[in-house]
Length: 253
Ligand SMILES: [Zn+2]
Image 1 (spheres, protein in one colour):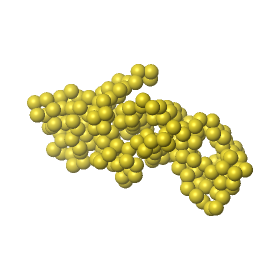
Image 2: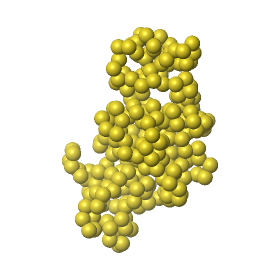
Image 3: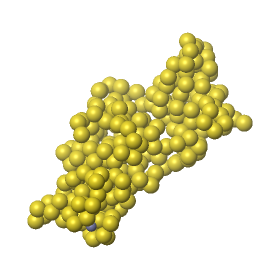
Image 4: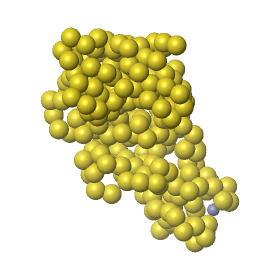
């Protein structure tokens, strides 16, 4: 049975001389993987080969679980072409696509994540976009939506409030991806997997948690960078592999 969805193209791979396999993010069907037969012919229903970031209306026949579906038609309605004008924007945008691909499963609808990706790509395409801050907001919201990020105010094992004390009186606060939250200086000794988190990064996370639509969280670049590194570490631990675009989008760990 045919399904119609708004969709953003997350990945394309050549399948044959004329066909592609494409991954799309959709609001109602999660990630969708389809074979686009004959799509690379100019006169195909999609008007030529599918491109990353292409956003529009996708008509497809879903595959059985774990199998490729079939693309019937795709028409681009939103062009994210400004992203291709500058390497830093392009890398940040490719990183956004990679995270959506890794964290959103097939048949696992997250309409809010679709909107988040759409808004993120639009923002990155604007000339005045603070790229590290846009990425920090995207990573944070994505982790919240898929349930991988807690409140980040209290120590997970003992419940003591730790936000705001990092760095004060030489106190160190840690983040554990396994626990999905913070560790105080008393509890950190017992946890093997952890990473020190600076007071600045913790404050940045707080700003993100308090951000509301229409009131942009404008983290300074250096603070956004620390937040980005921490969240990339968390995601990479959660999916059990390194993120290919992370070094290009946010720099070394
Ligand atoms: Zn504790």
